[in-house]
Each structure stands twice: as structure tokens, then as C-alpha cells.
Length: 241
Ligand code: SF4
Image 1 (spheres, rainbow, N blue to C red):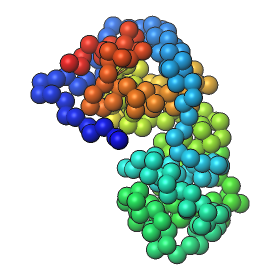
Image 2: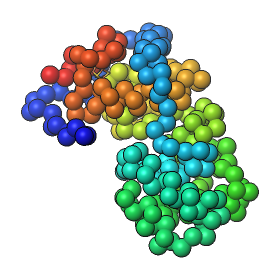
Image 3: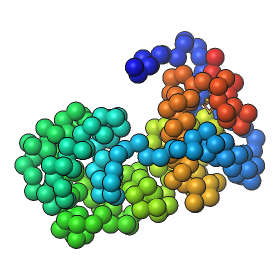
Image 4: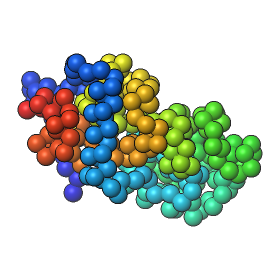
């Protein structure tokens, strides 16, 4: 059973602003390398939690995952892809039918519009194939940079940028892997900082392991610093009561 989120106790520090530390970029790079090594050891099996068999399925699943859970999306997509086997079939489907299938993911009207719009562009303008280019991807309805990074990194193995979702934003902040951002919501600056200090080939695997660590140990409300393998490398480790 999923744990009920607990509110942070009154007065408890929840430092989702970047902790102030004296550290050069070189020192930061060295510390981050050690963090990534530990994360890989902790989560050797870490991968994208959205079930998919192709970059196209990953794209649609990622659009559906906004404001939803991966578990919910993983229940919906097998039905969606069995009913509409190609981008053209999804694009031409009656809107109400699509809305009914994806209803449980929330914001179903907007999402139906986005996935059908994206499927139509893929069918009409890209010969039924998902483009492997950031500008082309972000020209699709419902696709912003974060979704494009997921598709490029996990779907095609192209490290064009770093995915910054809610977990990665929070962990990069607590671990002081960002320094130009003010807080965990500043995805643009966090991505830029991560791209500067993390080797490009690590961008996608780092994203997967950080997300797993965020789900299992470093949750938003109740980080388990005492059980955390990164505690000695984390400037926020002593900040939670
Ligand atoms: S020590 Fe671990 S659990 Fe605690 S804030 Fe740092 S990364 Fe999160």
C-alpha cells in the first residue's frame, strides 16, 4: 500500500533551496562523480518506469504521465496502443473514444488533444516516425523540452539534455548539484548546471537513478537521511529533523 504523505513537522527545515556550501566547480564535479557511482551501485536496474516498446509509445506515455503516476499510465497505454496501433490510427480516432481510454490519467481532454495532435504531426510530417531532433520534437503538440529529453535519451539513446522532473529537481537541489537555480522548481537552470558538471554519457542513466533514489529514499516530505547511501556527500543530510 502506498505510504500516506506526512507533513513536515512545524519548524522543521525542508531545504528545497540550494544549501550554501563553499565548493569550486572542480570540487563539485568530483563530488558529483562519487554520487553517481554510488547511485549506480544502489540502483543497477534503474530504468524508465513507463512501459513502452518504441520511442513513439514512450512519447505518448510521457505526455500522459503529466500530473499522473507511472502506474496509472502503464495501465492505460496497453489498451491505447492495442486499440490504435499506429500514429495514423490514433490521429484519426474519435476524440471521445480516446478520452474514455485515457480518462484515469487526469486532464484527459487536454491530453487527448495533445496525443492525437502529436500522432497527426508524426503521421503527416515525419512519415510515421518520431523525429530524433529537439526542435522537431518540441514542435509537436504537448511536447516541451522535458518530454523531448525523455524521448531522445531513453527512446533513442541521444543525450541532448537532462530530464528535470520533480524528483530530479528536488535531489539536484538538496545535493547542491545546482548553483544558479534558486530552488527545486527552477528546471531550466538546474538542467543547465547538471549539463555542465555531469559527463554527457551519464545524463540519461543519472536521471533514472536520481528518480529511483527520490522515490525510495529522498522523498519530498520525509527524506530518510539516516538510511541514505549519499549522506556523506550530501550537504542537506543534517537539515531534516
Ligand atoms: S542525505 Fe540522502 S535522503 Fe537526505 S537529503 Fe541528502 S540525498 Fe536526500
